[in-house]
Image 1 (cartoon, rainbow, N blue to C red):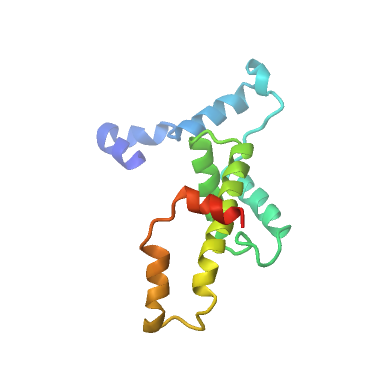
Image 2: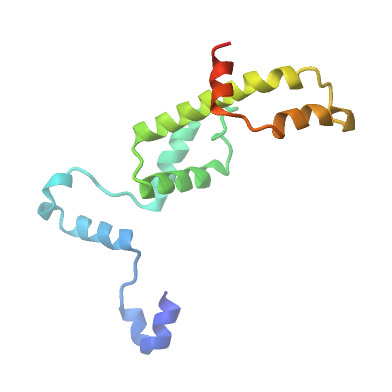
Length: 148
Protein backbone atom coordinates (compact mmCIF):
# COMPACT_ATOMS: atom_id res chain seq x y z
CA UNK A 1 0.00 0.00 0.00
CA UNK A 2 2.79 2.36 0.87
CA UNK A 3 4.44 1.91 -2.55
CA UNK A 4 1.21 2.91 -4.26
CA UNK A 5 0.87 5.89 -1.94
CA UNK A 6 4.46 6.99 -2.70
CA UNK A 7 3.56 7.11 -6.38
CA UNK A 8 0.66 9.42 -5.56
CA UNK A 9 2.04 11.76 -2.86
CA UNK A 10 5.78 11.12 -2.97
CA UNK A 11 7.99 10.94 0.13
CA UNK A 12 5.21 12.30 2.34
CA UNK A 13 3.76 8.79 2.17
CA UNK A 14 6.24 7.83 4.92
CA UNK A 15 4.54 10.33 7.27
CA UNK A 16 1.15 8.65 6.88
CA UNK A 17 0.03 5.79 9.11
CA UNK A 18 -1.17 2.88 7.02
CA UNK A 19 -3.03 -0.03 8.57
CA UNK A 20 -5.75 -2.54 7.89
CA UNK A 21 -9.32 -1.83 8.87
CA UNK A 22 -9.01 -4.14 11.88
CA UNK A 23 -5.60 -2.76 12.85
CA UNK A 24 -6.99 0.78 12.75
CA UNK A 25 -10.00 -0.23 14.87
CA UNK A 26 -7.75 -2.02 17.33
CA UNK A 27 -5.57 1.07 17.70
CA UNK A 28 -8.61 3.27 18.38
CA UNK A 29 -9.83 0.85 21.06
CA UNK A 30 -6.39 0.63 22.69
CA UNK A 31 -5.96 4.42 22.76
CA UNK A 32 -9.51 5.18 23.98
CA UNK A 33 -10.72 2.29 26.16
CA UNK A 34 -12.74 4.57 28.48
CA UNK A 35 -15.07 5.53 25.61
CA UNK A 36 -15.99 1.94 24.87
CA UNK A 37 -17.92 0.71 27.92
CA UNK A 38 -19.05 -2.63 26.52
CA UNK A 39 -15.55 -3.93 25.89
CA UNK A 40 -13.41 -2.23 28.50
CA UNK A 41 -12.20 -5.57 29.86
CA UNK A 42 -11.34 -6.97 26.45
CA UNK A 43 -7.94 -6.41 24.92
CA UNK A 44 -7.35 -7.06 21.23
CA UNK A 45 -4.40 -9.31 20.50
CA UNK A 46 -1.87 -8.99 17.74
CA UNK A 47 -0.82 -11.73 15.32
CA UNK A 48 2.09 -12.84 17.52
CA UNK A 49 -0.11 -13.27 20.59
CA UNK A 50 -2.70 -15.16 18.52
CA UNK A 51 0.03 -17.55 17.33
CA UNK A 52 1.23 -18.07 20.91
CA UNK A 53 -2.31 -18.90 22.06
CA UNK A 54 -2.82 -21.35 19.17
CA UNK A 55 0.56 -23.01 19.84
CA UNK A 56 -0.33 -23.36 23.54
CA UNK A 57 -3.60 -25.06 22.60
CA UNK A 58 -1.68 -27.22 20.12
CA UNK A 59 0.62 -28.47 22.89
CA UNK A 60 -2.39 -29.81 24.80
CA UNK A 61 -3.58 -31.90 21.84
CA UNK A 62 -2.76 -35.54 21.29
CA UNK A 63 0.27 -36.18 19.11
CA UNK A 64 -1.84 -37.71 16.31
CA UNK A 65 -4.32 -34.80 16.20
CA UNK A 66 -4.87 -33.17 12.82
CA UNK A 67 -3.78 -29.88 14.39
CA UNK A 68 -0.58 -31.06 16.08
CA UNK A 69 1.71 -30.52 13.09
CA UNK A 70 3.67 -27.31 12.39
CA UNK A 71 1.56 -26.16 9.43
CA UNK A 72 -1.59 -26.25 11.58
CA UNK A 73 -1.08 -22.80 13.12
CA UNK A 74 -1.49 -21.10 9.75
CA UNK A 75 -4.49 -23.28 8.88
CA UNK A 76 -6.12 -22.60 12.25
CA UNK A 77 -5.63 -18.86 11.79
CA UNK A 78 -7.37 -19.14 8.39
CA UNK A 79 -10.17 -21.16 9.99
CA UNK A 80 -10.64 -18.57 12.73
CA UNK A 81 -10.58 -15.75 10.19
CA UNK A 82 -13.10 -17.50 7.93
CA UNK A 83 -15.37 -18.26 10.88
CA UNK A 84 -15.28 -14.63 12.01
CA UNK A 85 -16.04 -13.43 8.48
CA UNK A 86 -18.98 -15.84 8.33
CA UNK A 87 -20.08 -14.64 11.80
CA UNK A 88 -19.98 -18.20 13.12
CA UNK A 89 -19.99 -18.68 16.85
CA UNK A 90 -18.03 -21.45 18.60
CA UNK A 91 -21.36 -23.24 19.02
CA UNK A 92 -21.95 -23.01 15.24
CA UNK A 93 -18.53 -24.54 14.60
CA UNK A 94 -19.27 -27.39 17.01
CA UNK A 95 -22.55 -28.09 15.18
CA UNK A 96 -20.68 -28.15 11.84
CA UNK A 97 -18.06 -30.54 13.24
CA UNK A 98 -20.77 -32.81 14.62
CA UNK A 99 -22.71 -32.79 11.32
CA UNK A 100 -19.52 -33.60 9.38
CA UNK A 101 -18.56 -36.36 11.80
CA UNK A 102 -22.06 -37.86 11.59
CA UNK A 103 -21.95 -37.70 7.78
CA UNK A 104 -18.56 -39.41 7.66
CA UNK A 105 -19.83 -42.11 10.00
CA UNK A 106 -22.92 -42.71 7.86
CA UNK A 107 -20.94 -42.78 4.61
CA UNK A 108 -18.44 -45.16 6.20
CA UNK A 109 -21.26 -47.57 7.02
CA UNK A 110 -22.40 -47.45 3.39
CA UNK A 111 -18.95 -47.89 1.89
CA UNK A 112 -17.53 -50.47 4.27
CA UNK A 113 -19.21 -53.50 2.62
CA UNK A 114 -17.80 -52.40 -0.75
CA UNK A 115 -14.27 -51.71 0.43
CA UNK A 116 -13.53 -54.15 3.23
CA UNK A 117 -12.89 -57.01 0.82
CA UNK A 118 -10.25 -54.99 -1.05
CA UNK A 119 -6.74 -56.08 -0.10
CA UNK A 120 -5.28 -53.41 -2.39
CA UNK A 121 -6.45 -51.01 -5.04
CA UNK A 122 -5.99 -52.33 -8.54
CA UNK A 123 -7.75 -52.51 -11.88
CA UNK A 124 -9.84 -55.38 -10.47
CA UNK A 125 -11.18 -53.15 -7.69
CA UNK A 126 -12.53 -50.60 -10.17
CA UNK A 127 -16.03 -52.10 -9.99
CA UNK A 128 -16.19 -51.45 -6.23
CA UNK A 129 -15.21 -47.83 -6.73
CA UNK A 130 -17.74 -47.40 -9.52
CA UNK A 131 -20.42 -48.55 -7.07
CA UNK A 132 -19.17 -46.00 -4.55
CA UNK A 133 -18.89 -42.94 -6.75
CA UNK A 134 -21.24 -43.31 -9.66
CA UNK A 135 -24.58 -43.59 -7.89
CA UNK A 136 -25.49 -40.48 -5.98
CA UNK A 137 -25.65 -40.93 -2.24
CA UNK A 138 -29.04 -39.61 -1.23
CA UNK A 139 -30.06 -38.30 2.14
CA UNK A 140 -32.55 -41.13 2.52
CA UNK A 141 -29.86 -43.76 1.99
CA UNK A 142 -27.69 -42.04 4.57
CA UNK A 143 -30.55 -41.99 7.05
CA UNK A 144 -31.24 -45.65 6.29
CA UNK A 145 -27.58 -46.47 6.96
CA UNK A 146 -27.68 -44.69 10.29
CA UNK A 147 -30.55 -46.87 11.43
CA UNK A 148 -28.52 -50.07 10.78
